[in-house]
Length: 269
Image 1: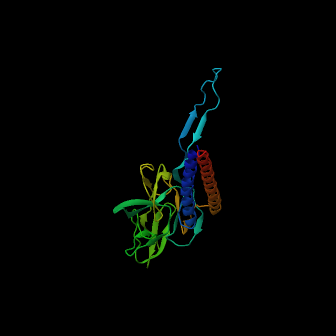
Image 2: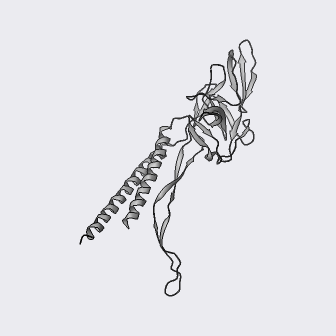
Image 3: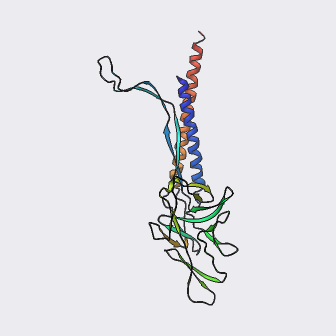
């Protein structure tokens, strides 16, 4: 019946609307430091089985095909893409890029509780008391905390995450802290909470913390940032194909509606 076609096409429009939202968000964050794009995965819905495949025919031979009518589609999930983004040289001493696997760890407030959060954005700064904080709208503190002395005139960060400073009146660089990175068994299971931050979930597993260049973690590159890994050309292609698919589903609804009108008119005679 055309009713099934109506429901199937409507489910397609709902699913494509969700994909359009994801594509639009990817494009909106094409210049967001450390942003990781998402893709939408789909799955088909239940099928109306009008004839089972393989039932015997009159000659007691299995019929090669059955009759199964699909009822539509739904979004099965959104999947994060953790491919590295391009590198943006900035020449700022508190701009850091992770060359390889891992996340910076910060402490932030989420849903009224203080939690650990994780980010690939490395645009750090100093707050009023000298602590290194992430340069987003809330300024979460890097974990473990590292404080820059007020009289520091040079900041150096090694690829192993060792932070050194040279203070006024001194000619040597002194170690003041050690950056630690975190990695997850399944980073795609992390939950995005905005502000360039992720939080762990049961799907991601607990974090494994260690200094850079150890335990499978990447190295730190100072004076540069990781840009968004969104490919604008691919996203624009997805945008166009999503729009065209949405139009095709709307045409299916129109055709099913016309079929129902014909059936309704036949009943008058």
